[in-house]
Length: 118
View 1 (cartoon, rainbow, N blue to C red):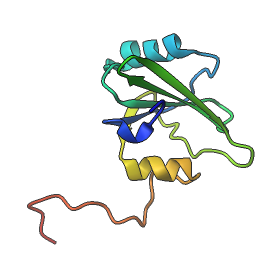
View 2: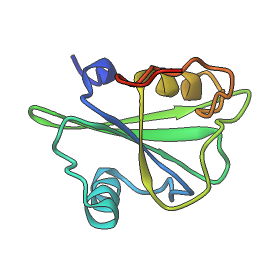
View 3: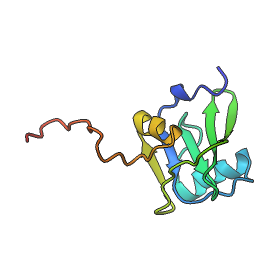
């Protein structure tokens, strides 16, 4: 199915600001050149501009790229701006981000690591 982001193996957000005028080739170049990630891996790459009210998502499917664009009519995304890095996020963090929440939820119960005892 076209643009089925639930099939993405990994989800990466590109922290900082991205020029939202970039198209598929420009966004793919950022992923490959700046972050040395495989844009053909089936991962979802998310980009956000300075206004924080629109995002672009880049996803490789078996036969080509899908470029998704979303503009919020009311509100802004809580986008990490701390550095120019591609940060891998969980599906839960992705949901929080799409709901207008920060991916840094302080009260969320995090998954336990095996072998750790309180």
